[in-house]
Image (cartoon, rainbow, N blue to C red):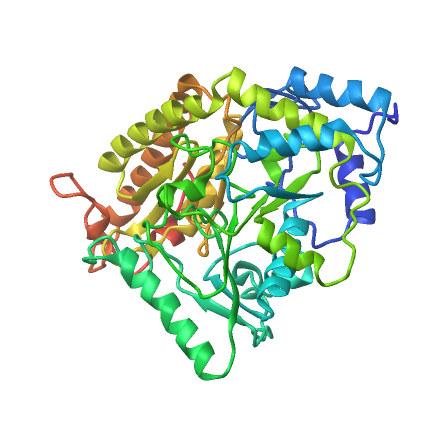
Length: 473
C-alpha cells in the first residue's frame, strides 16, 4: 500500500485523468473521500463519521474483525486455484448449501454477481438447449454484455438500444406503480399471466424458453416487493440473490423463500454480501443442470473463484451472521424502521409508499398521491441534505424517486430513529417552502392531492410543480 497521502482535490484530479468517465461517483458535485470504515460507519479524510445506509456489500459490518482475521490468516498460509484440493472449498460449499433447499446442491464459485449471472445463463441454455430468456422490466443483473441484454434498467438508457430477439421483458411486479396494483383483485396471478402470455408468443414463433431470471426483490428497479406467484416459465427459474440474500429480508435467509416453502429455483446466484466486500460470488444449482453443463464437453475453470482465501472469508461471514443473529436483527430493526417511516407517511404528503422486508426498505416519493407523479428532484434533495447530516442514503428506481435502505445488518434501532428524524426535518422543510411559494401564487393546480385528508394544505398556486420551487431552505 502506498504511503503517499493525497489531498481530496488531488484524488479528484487523478480520478478524472485516469478513471473511465462512465464510472460515476456518489454525490458527484461534492464527493466524499472515504478512508476508513467500521461496522455501520464510514470515515472521511478529516475523521468525520458517516452513518452508512447504502452498503449492502459490507453485509456483517465494514471491516468485521472475524472476517478480516479469517482472510489474513489464510493469506499467510496459501492462496491458489481450485485445481488443487483444499478443505476450504468443500467446507464452504457444504455450509452454504445447508442454508438452501436440498435440491440446490452443486456450487460454482466465481468472482462477482455479474460473473455469476452470466454463468447462470450458460447453465440454463446448455440444460434446455434453448436461447430465449424472460426478464423483468427495470431489472438489473450485471454489467457484462450478456447481462446488459437482459437488464432493461441499463439498456433503456441507450437511445439506440435494440432488444435482443431472444430476450423478452415481462412487467415489473410492482403493486404500487406497476400495471397491476394493490387494488387489483389478484395482482400475483395477473403478473404471472403476463409471463404466460410471453411464453405462448415465443412458442407460436417456434421458440422455447431457456430460463426466466428475476431478482428475488428488485433493487435498482425501486425496492420492489413482488406478490407471491408461482410461475412456470417452461424453462429454468434463476433467482438473482446478489442484492438481497444472506438474511437481509429477516424472515428468511434467502429472499426467494418469501414466495413460499414450495418454491425452489433451479439456479440461485449470489454476490455482494457473500464476501463482505471481498470479491467473490457463487452459482448454486441442481445435479441435473450441472451434469448437463458437463455434457457439453467444455471444461469449466475459474482462476480465482473458490480460492482458499475467498472461502475462508465466506465461512467467516456465515459464522458471523449466526453468531450475532444478524438475520434476526434485520427483522427487528427493519420492522422498527418501517414503522417509523409509516408514521412519517401520515405526516408528509411527499411519501407515497413504504415497502420492504427486513433491512431492504424503499420509500417512494411522489408529488401527487393520485397520479403518482415521481418526486425525483425531491428525492435527490433528501439524499444530499442527509449527506450534510453525515448520513449516506441513495435514491433509485426508474424515476430515481425511491429512497433505498440497504445498510449493513449491524444497523441498530437508534440508527433507524436518527435517519427517520432527519428525513422528517428535511421533508418538513420541503413542505414549508412549497407552502410559502404556493400561497404567493394563487391559481388552479393539481397539487392538492399531495396533502392527506384533514391536514392543512397551502393555497393552490399556478402551474409550477414542486420541482420548480424546491428546497432552498
